[in-house]
Length: 227
Ligand code: G5P
Ligand code: MG
Image 1: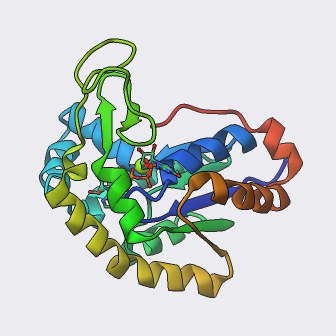
Image 2: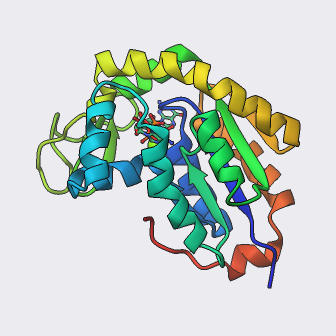
């Protein structure tokens, strides 16, 4: 059996983690896990963790470490037979240490996107909650303003994409990410990609992963649903 591959993608809100990890999952057959999607599913299902998490997300704050590790680490521990890519976790040094005690990472991708680009992207992002379809009022607007193209239902903004929460999220990211970036740099597994457009960054990530992921796991690894 090919060696399993474990990777993390980090970056500030709106840096393209979701967009790029979807491409990686498709191209290389990794299971994709998104901490943000997982939190939102818990909020929608009104679990205890979800109810607590909502009070933080609404204010643009990180969900406490013990809540995140309790939600995510058991999922990763279950995935002993899958190569995976984790989007959005770890976000703090405590989370990185907890992850470290669970598994050895092969690679960390860090996205370095200018602040003004992030602000523009996120304040323009609208979602169709039932399907998860994402629109960007500049990049890919809906046919009818404020309405989903397929169902015609109203679009909403994530609570944490609203301007007040957004500024707090972006400011906070730099401070908490620095020690994690330093940690992964010292382990020799950090790869940083800078730019303003996902389509220009993607070819570099694609060629890096092509050299790192054994070709067998590109075909052998089964795609599994997100948590
Ligand atoms: P999330 O859901 O992980 P964030 O804040 O890290 O949320 P987000 O918003 O999901 O990040 P992203 O995944 O990095 O952004 O980026 P994306 O969605 O792919 O792209 C952003 C937008 O830009 C989209 O509309 C996309 O179409 C567009 N876009 C992409 N590329 C381009 C481009 O080249 N050009 C243009 N014009 N547009 C582009 O976490 C949410 C919250 O959950 C909690 C926190 O409260 C967090 O704020 N949380 C955690 N808390 C503690 N610890 C953790 N580990 C946590 N994980 C989540
Ligand atoms: Mg995301």
